[in-house]
Image (tube, rainbow over all chains, first blue to last red):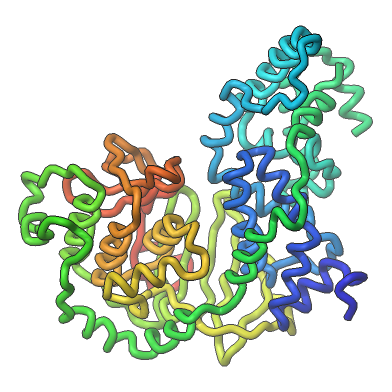
Amino acid sequence: MNPVTSTDAELIERSLRVPETFATIFDRHAPHIQRYLARRLGQQVADDLLAETFLAAFAKRGRYDLGRPDARPWLYGIATNLVGQHRREEVRRYRMPSVVPDESDHADRVAADVTAQAMRSMLTGALASLSTADRDVLLLIAWEQLSYDEVAAALGVPVGTVRSRLHRARRKVREALGTDNHTEVEELLNNG
Amino acid sequence: MDDLQLVRELGDETPMRSADDLASARARFVAGMRPRKWRRMGIIGVASLGLAAAVAAVVTLVPFGSPAPVRQDAALTSSAAPQPVETAVQLLNHAAAAARAKPDAVPRPDQFYYVRTGERESWQSVDGTHDGLLILEQPKGDRALLPGCRNGRSAGVIGDREIPGLWYPCEPQGVYRSDLPTNADAMAEYLKGERRDITYKNVASLVVEQYLPAQQRATLFEAMSKMPDLVVVRDVKDGSGRPGIGVTSAVLKGNRWTLVFDATTYEFLGDTERAIVQSGFVDAVDQRP
């Protein structure tokens, strides 16, 4: 068995007999899962929860659906569950004034930055106002670029539920930004 | 203006970390995969369940960890007029005394420990050899089989179904933790384990998800009082909204680290996320106490 060319499903199946095999799953997916956790909860908590996510995955690997070659959506689902246990921290973070370090602190960018900052805080405020379930779907699609099917698999909900949650989340974001345009949303949704 | 694009740009602010950056998380993960010493102890503990409980009942613990003499007796007899709590060490010592005073349930090995926290319910095998069950809050009502470990192997499962022909090696891990130390130093060592940075979470997981006999539970709170930087949190609510008094770390502070106790009896209620709403030993999965 070649650890480079094997699918995740093959590695997970093998890890039931040879647990160390699961370390390869970490190596393949940890950077993405860490970034997802960091986007939602900040770097510090993300570092904390990264090992926890993979240990939870390791513990329940016996229940992995071996029909799915790529384990990343499953790992996103486990990470999302952990994020859900910290939803108050997540919401507080979105409501905080921006703490993004400005690495290109240049005078002629200030005016543009003010607009961008206002837009940004409206946006994060909108994220904070979403229900956890709606936010999960929106961010897995927008940030992690999962397909509807993958989000459905990750969260264990039907694809129709993914569509309706995304629809509701985007409507709220657009309302918060004052750019609600029903037709355009419908159009995007139908293309999605 | 595309709202999805705006959200995406917000996500772009967070860079992808390199494998080097993730090395310490990887080390913690790999360490956590390894079977630990206490799992081997667990088998002994389970095999001699009755004996261990009997021994635990007669052990007298030397109080420790408090600069002042521990007032166990005071805490035991003063539920009408509770001792004022100034420090986290005092609070945890009161919690330890309350744990010791609580009548201890000694289950049969074939029973299950039932816990409900919010909408999550679990039935875990007392000796680890019987099939338990978890009913999840998310997705709500989903059932997950917790396969028991018999003859050195347990079934592979998807959700609440076993996968025919798929087994993996195991050692039974019972939910009744009479195998844990009843000495505070040994307990502190156990807590540190190989994942010392999530020690507080270990404490919460142990008391919320598993059944510690009175001595072990008391020892756990005493061991916790040795941790540095503990602070008392007044007027805190547990995961089900019950008010209480909490203890957390001044360094790691945040909801998930706060353990909540009844402000009068110092009985452990849960943490700020999860509260033990109902618990007890039952004869079969799907039974409630």
